[in-house]
Image (cartoon, rainbow, N blue to C red):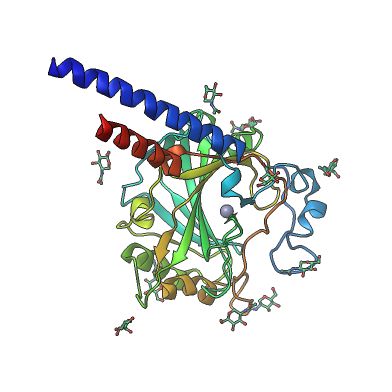
Length: 322
Ligand SMILES: *[C@@H]1O[C@H](CO)[C@@H](O)[C@H](O)[C@H]1NC(C)=O
Ligand SMILES: *[C@@H]1O[C@H](CO)[C@@H](O)[C@H](O)[C@H]1NC(C)=O
Ligand SMILES: *[C@@H]1O[C@H](CO)[C@@H](O)[C@H](O)[C@H]1NC(C)=O
Ligand SMILES: *[C@@H]1O[C@H](CO)[C@@H](O)[C@H](O)[C@H]1NC(C)=O
Ligand SMILES: *[C@@H]1O[C@H](CO)[C@@H](O)[C@H](O)[C@H]1NC(C)=O
Ligand SMILES: *[C@@H]1O[C@H](CO)[C@@H](O)[C@H](O)[C@H]1NC(C)=O
Ligand SMILES: *[C@@H]1O[C@H](CO)[C@@H](O)[C@H](O)[C@H]1NC(C)=O
Ligand SMILES: *[C@@H]1O[C@H](CO)[C@@H](O)[C@H](O)[C@H]1NC(C)=O
Ligand SMILES: *[C@@H]1O[C@H](CO)[C@@H](O)[C@H](O)[C@H]1NC(C)=O
Ligand SMILES: *[C@@H]1O[C@H](CO)[C@@H](O)[C@H](O)[C@H]1NC(C)=O
Ligand SMILES: [Zn+2]
């Protein structure tokens, strides 16, 4: 008797939970490589306002990144489930760090990868790199959310595993690449050298001050270590492009909602240490593309939607009343 009564109560509650979720989801919906060119971030002749002219094949396209994400417009998609990350916990996954003259890039060992999260197949992680402004004073993330720009943005670049490392094939496929974007926010207090993983990462910047410099990364820090405190089930998803020429429209973008928190002193090191050319060149600052106005459709994982907790509240209310 007790067991069957409990069973019918649960069924009754589930019905209301489903109704509540349906209302919520409906409400949310209603709210609803070719050749490289000489491009730059800094000079009027080659900065991002000129890319659509100097790299016209793609940079003038209609699904260009980055974008300002309007969170109220993002539609909830239940297919945007959790990811599985491979070797993100490996402390030997970061192999080399280099100054490309445009960014600081870290190469990743083979075996690092990602699947799930609504991606069509497994993708291999090739490298990560960063975008920034001028220290914490001038933020330089590429994506913005409801107009907010973060101090930095970290991009993990992944290629469909089936292409076996052939990036030429990847950029020719509208979903050949998957980019994972993480915002970097300054810690609010007077902490320095935090987190330890970022202190280690930034310690290499003095070794790569000039364009073309690179050094090996010693074992000890993993991708997980560099991404503490981020709930990786909460993210935005849209189809976009590379954010540097040739701006190929080949990227499935994942932009995580929660930022990684890094102390101000470490964020400042990027704009204080590395240069865009030789030792007399200017410091590498404001290395991000401005947002593009394609009004691209953005989806969001359901993990973070307030409507889910509204559904739970309804469930709890129903359970309490019966
Ligand atoms: C980029 O170049 C345009 C002219 O092409 C200029 O108006 C703009 O100020 C430049 N921006 C930067 C950041 O240099
Ligand atoms: C971009 O430029 C190319 C080459 O000039 C041109 O064929 C194409 O129509 C342009 N696309 C858009 C969206 O303006
Ligand atoms: C989820 O994926 C399925 C199968 O690929 C597809 O039919 C469905 O339209 C997707 N749902 C959304 C909301 O995109
Ligand atoms: C990394 O995670 C995998 C799967 O969860 C686990 O089997 C492995 O022991 C972990 N490796 C390290 C170095 O923590
Ligand atoms: C960047 O910030 C530094 C220190 O705050 C300042 O001296 C410099 O003028 C800034 N550069 C630009 C281009 O804004
Ligand atoms: C890479 O992919 C391109 C485009 O599909 C193809 O033409 C090329 O032969 C491939 N390269 C290798 C080394 O397989
Ligand atoms: C950090 O700030 C707190 C108050 O906000 C202060 O008590 C503390 O002395 C500061 N620490 C350092 C190292 O400046
Ligand atoms: C980086 O440079 C410092 C000196 O500035 C040197 O002691 C250290 O060995 C270098 N590290 C690497 C990995 O080359
Ligand atoms: C640095 O590069 C500039 C132009 O790129 C050049 O004029 C200058 O001689 C170089 N300086 C050194 C020390 O190599
Ligand atoms: C986003 O929402 C605003 C109103 O809130 C609407 O005017 C706009 O067309 C929407 N954009 C997209 C891409 O759905
Ligand atoms: Zn990037």
